[in-house]
View 1: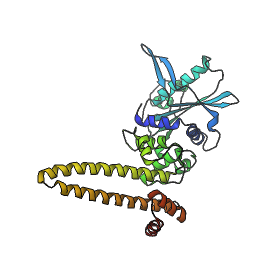
View 2: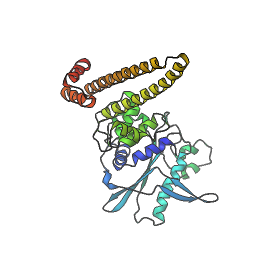
View 3: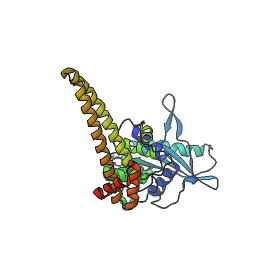
View 4: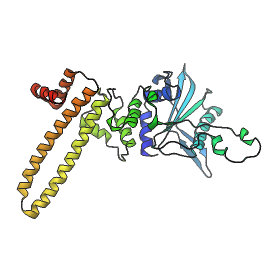
Length: 330
């Protein structure tokens, strides 16, 4: 499984996110499903291959439960690449789910709904039904009318209209808005699943190695149970990234300085210069962090006094320094 698909799968596994996806994309915003009515169902099925038994894995599978009985099964398939034969994979997934009912492995009989969440850049122009795959061929008579049709329900997550994005109530709202609006996106929505959210956004932005996400959050001092808004989380994450970049730059600068100092016999001068440079960089970084926080909070309509208190606490400023920065940047 690709990194993007895996990150999306892990994010969608949370019950509140899964319920939100179902309510918005299937029930068009009606709050029909709550997270407590969803129960994890098997994602793995086995079928006979040419030589051996083989397994197939659906990304997310959930039963809808009412009064102790299964009334519906929902399947999510995540795709970052367009697949012209995706409809056949769906036939395998959905067919296996119905086979479970036929074999009596579950006591209830219920419909199975699968949706495809497409995270790729381009539009999905591949076939969306069995019928579409074969209608261009010159089959005799009315043979096409006897082909059992199966439809592929694809949602292009990077291109959801704003009126649909606005219906999401979970962290999924943050994901789809970020994809639509880019790096300038800011919101005062509270973030629930911080590690899973940041990891998914990083993978969707093209980063390959995102396994250090938890470590990054720990360095920021952010815990999963903390109350924090998108604005605050993005601000801290950006600042942490800049700090790491500056540290790496200083480290490389020191290496180069030593090499050059040995060559030119000016080691001490270079060391002093580096120390002064580090101090100046740190001062500038703090200044820019303060400015970014004040401007962002103002754009989001935050209260002036609350913003001043937040600036004072986060950057350990005196009352006078906090007031001066508010005067400069508010």
